[in-house]
Image (cartoon, each protein chain N blue to C red):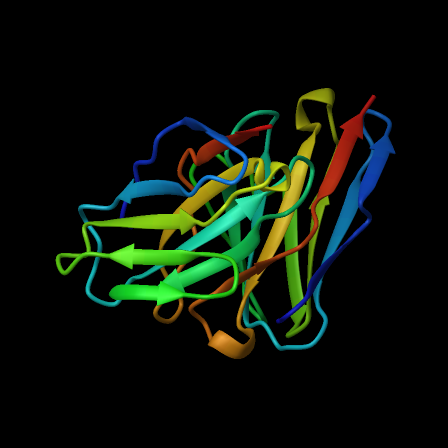
Length: 110
Length: 117
């Protein structure tokens, strides 16, 4: 299973763009990259998933370089409600157990 | 998107008793479900992988006789914490692979807060 490395924590002011980078040097050919958001005492919530290049949805963008050894989650114009822990997961592509790394605790400051 | 529901959301039990937590995929069939445990300010720790119709696969260090997992149907997996002790107090979360994205996305339940007194 690919191991992921993320910054433990980040602070950002409201309205700014936040980029959280995740390293996954041992990503396998059939692995997808998925980001989840977790609020205290809640289950993780799916944000975005990608395989290569760039993916964008209504809440975030995901940038994946050609070698796929890292990925960057971009949150545009964060608000206080975006304060949460963000997890980068690598796997999927069929049956695959999902294991979590440490996650990044994002604190949005007024 | 697909919905996974856990029940109960929280439970308090006495030491030595058993507690059952249910995980249901409401609008899709899930052949594979996962059970996690999360202690305060820590990440989710995978406990076991539950496959419909077969025995669960436990992660190293997780006691299979203490944490009984049953996945009797494509929409329901249960975790029973047997002879619970205060150190078993934690946040338990299940997830299921499936839904619109097939098996590449895991959908999570809302979690169950277990407190053993």
